[in-house]
Amino acid sequence: SYLKYKKETDKILNWLQTETRFDTYNYLLEQAINYLKISGFDFLESIDNIIIVMLTQSLNNVLVQKPETNIELPTITIQEFDNLFNEFLVYINAPKSWKQAYDELKSSGRISFEKQVKDLDPSMCYRDENDILRILISTDGTIISFCSFVHEFMHYIPMQDSMTLIQLSISEFPSIFFEKISAQFLRD
Image (cartoon, rainbow, N blue to C red; front, side, top):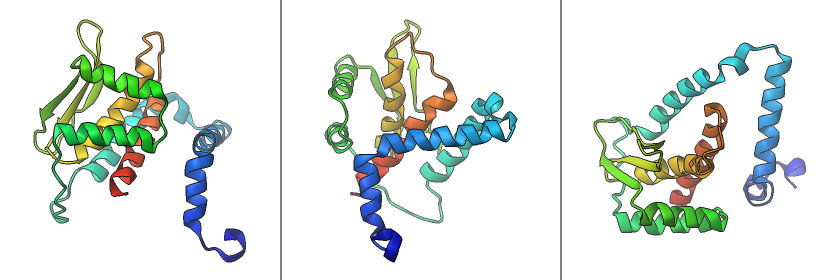
């Protein structure tokens, strides 16, 4: 129907999201990397630096409120945050292990919220001085902290296995992907 009439793109996007999301995502990543290898770019050798610049620009563009837009984001309590994240895990059909990981983070007090200073968002998933994995979320009290948490939680999942060494360039793709899905979830 779409090829013939160029209509109903929502059905195609829904099919991609529900049926072939990860296969399509992996295929597109493979095609992009193969193109860069064939083109002889030095891109792959300096991808970490490129990703840092790209993320800085995209996060500043997407997450930082522009004064001229005057968009008032709704505030969120910790309980609302918790309920939303549990709903989000259902929304993305997350494995049970992700719910267990979230519950473990919560019960052990390894999720911290700090008041955001200016427009800077130093949210992070990190190992503390005792090598314990934690998530720090910088929040201005609005719903945007939910998207930041989703991003950092997607770093937490592979970092749980301390034997796993993940390159920055690879680790950012799922985090950005699910951050975008979380924004769509909030809109829905």
